[in-house]
Length: 356
Image (cartoon, rainbow, N blue to C red; front, side):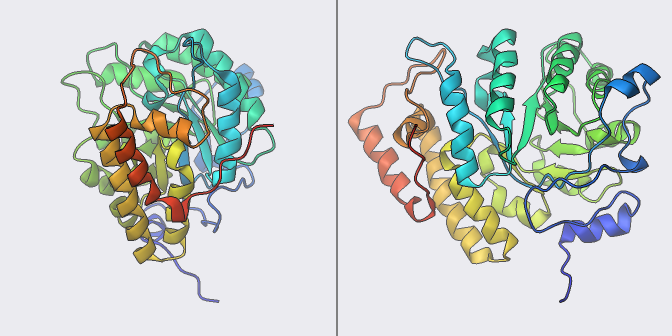
């Protein structure tokens, strides 16, 4: 059998032989703990005794940022959150991510986030999907404290957007250094810029990764996004680069060599999984055709506020369309447009499991 290498594999073999690893066919497979190339930041002996060994993970595929469900009264619905995990397993995704912007993160209290972490960790137990907990907070100390709590739940990975408090890349460095210091698990850097006038440039990311190798996972969504993706892929220490932006550019990003998608797409999780499968099989015609139908739905969501939440309810993933701070009115015309476009995805959709 002839071994086939992707563009990313070739770049890694040329530019980062010391860090490269073989890529299994599956989207997510846990392997043995890594060696020195995956070691975490320097820590005290007490911290070393407390933290687990660093992990080597495949960590490729479709990583869905969970939407946050609410009861009719606006309370966080933890039962629907756990059910969403069941659905995503059926849909064939490789990882769960929560809470990010797609999860209404700014509208959640810290207590709700901690409780949500616990619910997701329990709901995902034994399911085989990667669990990625979002630990971003406005200030560094708050993010570090949340990361410490997340660490107790033994997630596969953590993810963090940059802080919203600060004035410079020095503040960014302090923030990500603080998070890196409380875990040796992979930490995904989400590059959404949060401080006006601060450029989250790729060289700064590479500097962070050289100091803290477990930060070598990047969800790239800063402009110019295609240039930034290509600037990161194959660089020493960069383990994974993920597409974002609701998957709007996913087909092209795959050609550029990304390792998967990280986005809020629970209502289309099965469809994105089919698209990933087509890509893994080298069937670019199917990648194109599936993506074309998805783009129609993504455009529909932009045209009709509330369409995404309606689809979560329509497909039976959520029991309400309630959202905090928003109450879009869906007229008959708007609903007809949503459902007409959704029918274009039916060949790629699975039945949502019934509730027990």
